[in-house]
Length: 273
Image (cartoon, rainbow, N blue to C red; front, side, top):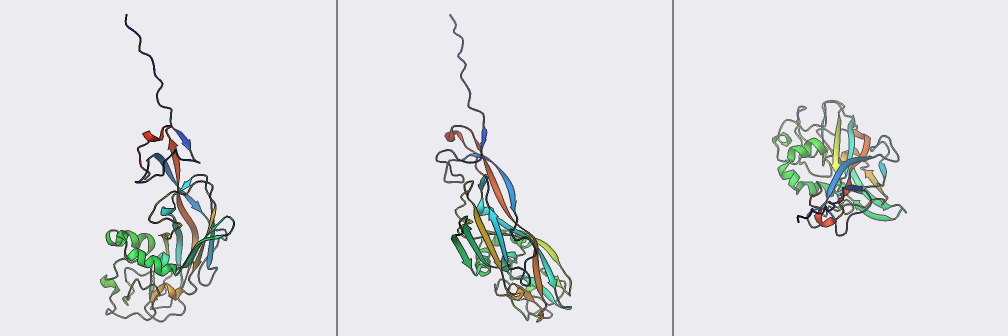
């Protein structure tokens, strides 16, 4: 007599779980790996407006999410606007968009200070100069952050026409060429320039090295304090007291991660990307 095969139930269908991970699952290379979906979330300042040395210098963000947050990819995004620039002057941004930041503070929902980084502009300049991004993606750094990774570029030669009079304090770029057609110019010959720039945030809270995910429901505040004077982050060809900038359309860009659970965590094999 031939017996009929017994039907066995298949694996449970995948479902979305936005609040918890399977046991032992952490994501990335040292953990059980899992399927996920990544969506970028924008967080806008509580004191939305125009920011700069002659405007409000503190930007406050209250951040919380019902999904996991990938803080290692958190970015500050803003329109960088040269407000004023004297005629025959030429100006570049020393240290990129991150060079405009004097201090970053992180607080929990109760207002307790979790982390504070003073002299942030100088710190991020050193970190970027020593990073793989500066060595292998110099063009991407310039286009996205306004950061000049190749400080030996001939366009920055002090011996060229003109010369530098006013220097920024981040010391990423040692000099500036005098001609107005400088490829790195953020503003030149009284031209008012607007560029959208982004800066990947650094620090222990943003887990630049560990790359862990922040669980859902954890609220925190980010306070970004800008430099007091535009000359702290600008290098200009002439001693131009009028040179100034502001930031508009400011927001934080943080990827959220939605976990796709498949029942048995041991069967999960796809890495977060």
